Length: 252
Image 1: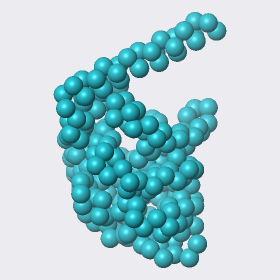
Image 2 (image 1 turned 60 degrees about the vertical axis):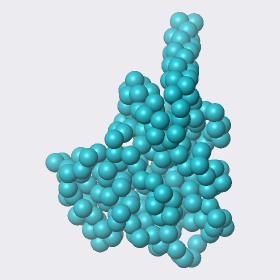
Image 3 (image 1 turned 180 degrees about the horizontal axis):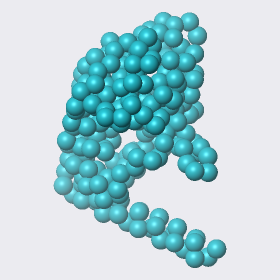
């Protein structure tokens, strides 16, 4: 694909030396070349900064300084970005090598859309498994994230409407998507194929996820009864899933 628009890719990292090099290579080896690559390091004390310096010729901008967490670092990267599309790839994930080519094509063919998203590969011990986008609005509103945030490419105009809530530690991307989906559902465009690989190592506790889900829904405009229903429904579903897992182990 002949490069046409400038795409900003942001990697946020803190003490991510284990996988950072793989992430960087997945960006600089893309089949699409018109890339502004930005790395926001949170003041790492491992070899992350040394790895960043090793690839300095391929990185457009980078900083290393303390921040208030993952979403603060994302907001910093967005403020530094100048591309027509902005993608986020964290330091333990990596893109398929034609990811940008696929998403730029979708953007050029759908100029009225502002949030482009796709499927992802979840990396598990037994290999990688495709996690498809789930279009259910009910599940998004009352259970949890149905979109694949690492696959998203978002326009600056959308980020001007709302950035990531730094008060949340694990579900600010959920709040962002929930707000956008409720207020402007027609801004989303789905690409039906996996473009990114996502490691599951860093998953937070279920209790923290449900607590932050309650806060995120309040920020997105849900009334108390809606938030309470989502809180109870989430617990009921997870109790059922745990019971099913235990039953399957017992029957083996």
